[in-house]
Image (cartoon, rainbow, N blue to C red):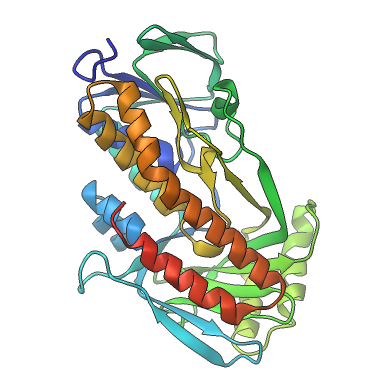
Length: 375
């Protein structure tokens, strides 16, 4: 039953980017997939994210890149602006899908979720909401999975794609420390300024700010607040406090700051990273995405790693005689790539806190080029 030519059934925990991508890739290979998602059916709220070249390349393999390009905002440059508000340099990222398509796309998180969710369902994945994994046991060639509603599944594969605070990871006995890096990251949805045709990043004397287009009409402002402890602010204080932090920046940031007053979506989150030491799997169970490797947002590549994970996981399982062998090959193939990106994101976070932006920019550029290599 462990053979991939036998009963190909899988439970995936989490209907986020990693889980939905893995569900689609597995279902297309003939697997019967059930997703257990603790949250409600509604699309997640949030500002947006950047699908870098590796993200688009992986989505293109699923036939979804064009849908993301159509509903997001394609771009190919990152403009760095110094503390005086003057352009410092412009990075042109590699166009991994050819010269006629952009290097990356900014997209609203609910839009990406809708695209991935619809494709997983189209491929036959069954998505159950309000339920998660409660217990896991390897049962000979299968995995016995008890869900939080008391029902039990005996499947050939269990995939934990339930995020940086993964419960699946703990149930499998896999340990990962979550590290806080002295930064709180802010995001606010705003109307897109006409000059914003690529990502803009603004160096500050204390913090770092930026703007990412999400569509013809929408963008998000971000600010990385340095040298702070983890804390929670009342929702009513978020927009005024973000505008106050942006006061220190000259130039175009002041236009961005003025747009915050009309924003109804401002969030503030700690910059946390996590990285599993050793294996990501136990028997026929594995964790992927942020559950295995959660980078800081400075590299804008968490989604790329998650999407790649789903594709590579299905590919390696298909190539091997047993699920266990496929999981070992998957982990071996992914470990160094994901470690490099997480460690680079941590290094950039440290450089930002000491305002060594001239060192952070080339480090990010070199890592983007490394990620451009095939997954």
